Image (cartoon, rainbow, N blue to C red; front, top):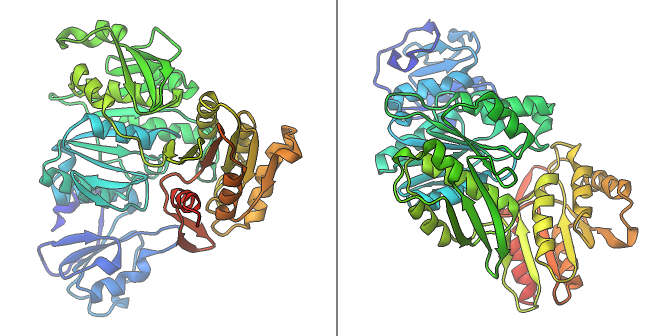
Length: 505
């Protein structure tokens, strides 16, 4: 039973009965007979408070961070108590030992960056076959879908998902890797066969405090590339991003692939040829990549032109990153192009709501100034008349980005409606006042914006303003089907609200 502590330093507080471990959990509600309970100290809940409940439910081993007094617990004589410092960082190794390192039996692709992670994961799962995917919009193993709490789950859940993916026959495990997960060690037990860096703009500074800390957390993924006799992991870097350029300069090694839409010296670069009714036609140039890596590639041309059901320069970056990743995993370019040409739209990412009003209504997850600007500039480009923008900012999160989002919106919007996103425990009016400061700083006309805290009312107001040839951008929530007000999570879906209004309800 101590095999789960291989490569983990631990202190034995009490040795109980020998037993065969049937499962490991850090949630006491999931504990069953002969389980191991991991008592972690969290920001809101301390697992040590639930040790007795775990014992009562049948736990035969308690792994704790604190030097607990074993004698305090009822019916604990047969229970083993083990102390492990900084258990959150060690839990991944413990789980890997128990599940026999499933991460070494599947190819793992990690995607990190501020924007583009979810879209990139969808693109990749459409290119690759027999895949599992985890991230913001949920988890999926082959054809089975699961809900998710965090973009990147706790290490124990992650190993369970990888183990299940291996057992179900998946060949690839595609995961969005958050800066939080990298910082606190949720993915320390993994090695990546391919890692994509999309971009870095201000976000999550409530957690990281500085952009330098945020950057250092993100780039950690490139120290985790797989390196063995069977495969050397590849780093895919957007060098048009200033932080990406820094990473590439630091790691300009054979296994790093640069992508760009501005620098023709990049390994893979692309261009938007024109926008179409359903997306855009793009040109992908592989000349430099082939010179560097193409010795074993057959039937691969220097240049490819094709249409894809995505729009915007920001999506071209996502496409380039996924092409580079797929190529590095041994997928042929002809096959990649075939898959890209038939790929469906990504839920909640520039998702267009069909209507008979001769207007374009777009729902998007953009919740940073950079994300908002990318979406807005693209929408402005393909809109005949006005662009009306509805957005807000989440409560209990980075305050500094709020006015920056407003400043970004002024660059493409003809009219702006400020509304609530997920205010959480903050006063929505205070959040909206913070956003408004950006409009005032940009001297955006007072008659060109309005503040409506109720999100459904804001959407209804925006819909009433629409005229032929206009576009309405509803930003911030995208695929989300809930709104968090106070501590209460209630059902709310921007797309449903729009369709209800279009139906006259």
